[in-house]
Amino acid sequence: MSFANLGLIDSILRTLEALDYREPTPVQKQAIPAVLKGRDVLAAAQTGTGKTAGFALPLLQKLTMEGSQVAANSVRALVLVPTRELAEQVAQAVQQYAQNLPLRTYTVYGGVSINPQMMKLRKGIDLLVATPGRLLDLYRQNAVRFDQLQALVLDEADRMLDLGFAKELDELFCALPRKRQTLLFSATFSDAIRLMAKELLRDPLSIEVSPRNTTAKGVKQWLVTVDKKRKSELLLHLYRERGWDQLLVFAKTRKGVDELEQLLLAEGIAADSIHGDKPQPARLRALQRFKAGEVRVLAATDVAARGLDISELPRVVNLDLPIVAEDYVHRIGRTGRAGATGEAVSLVCADEVELLAAIETLIGQVIRRQDEPGFEPDHRVPVTAPGGAVLKKPKKPKVKLVPGAGARAGQGKIHMGNWFEADDDKPKAKAVRAVPKFGEKPRPKKK
Ligand code: AMP
Image (cartoon, rainbow, N blue to C red; front, side):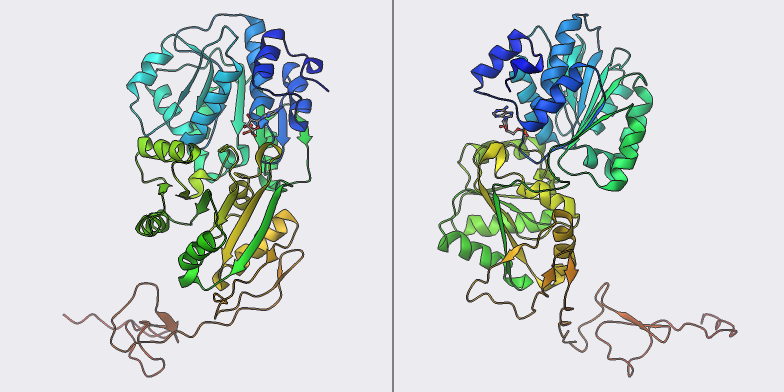
């Protein structure tokens, strides 16, 4: 099937030819005609399979065919995305797709000056890509209006609908016209999010181009078990031993990302990082340098997990497993895009076995283990089984208590209703806080 069969107009077909898009991907085959007809859509398709063009091409065509003029400060179609990097990328794709069309497209996101965005919105925008927080700021300042809005897209829809964006989205939904076309796209949808999504959609076409929550076929997944404290050392070892080239490494925390970047730089490896505490220009620069191949290793939090299209990225490493299983699918989806092959390697310690089991349940497969000689863990990672079961509990690591080392937050315990610091050796230890027995009056405080 060709793009022409889907009912796209000549000016768009010419653009697709120039981009060397020879035939529509499965999600495009189903989404493009449905969106052109004006239907609401809930589309689940694997990472890197052309979802952006799936919603952008038909929306751009509809906006062109209707031909109406966009009023000052107004928006006719809105695409909401969860991160600034993704906003930039989707906007670039939209701009490419709209290059032969008489339309204005633009993107707004936080972390950069709002004034140029306000100026640009004055003339009105046909298709706007935005992150929710900045869009709301602009709306509150009357820089953007939605009375002409006819279509709303939530890209990475499950992320957009989870609790993190609830406040902003509630306010935005109140401001949007109720009569509109709504399109939800993602690689992962939990059942709870599907239920919530249904509330937003009117007789939607449900597109499911692969089994639910699956990872891209071309991505080879494996894991190495290792003690937590040796993870960075193992990463460096694998990087050198296996001659790994470009690498996107995910760590759980911003601090973890910074520490990894510092370590890599100290080892003479060209590295950079992306996380929420970095100024936006530095985040964008890091991504550009990585895409251009100037940076060999990009360390990131899950802010880089969704949607980013890094051409021919060969490998993703999880230095830490993600807390939310769906994020695993998105993280490793940065490789193996547009039919390419890739590799996803996770460094897993005993503490993470429950996270591993949840991921394996979600993706419906047990990830292959491969030991790395010299890095066998002291704290064994229990074997997981199909369905995400943990077969044996990990041995509790013995904590050596150092007498007199002072209190450490979160390391005490309650025994017989009394709180003991970590360093106290129950039951000889003296209670820090006495809890009155049932029926006993609390002792008066000493003056
Ligand atoms: P997306 O999932 O939208 O981020 O797209 C993943 C990659 O596939 C991007 O680099 C797109 O430019 C590319 N792409 C999307 N649709 C097609 C197509 N029909 N033929 C070839 N490449 C495509």
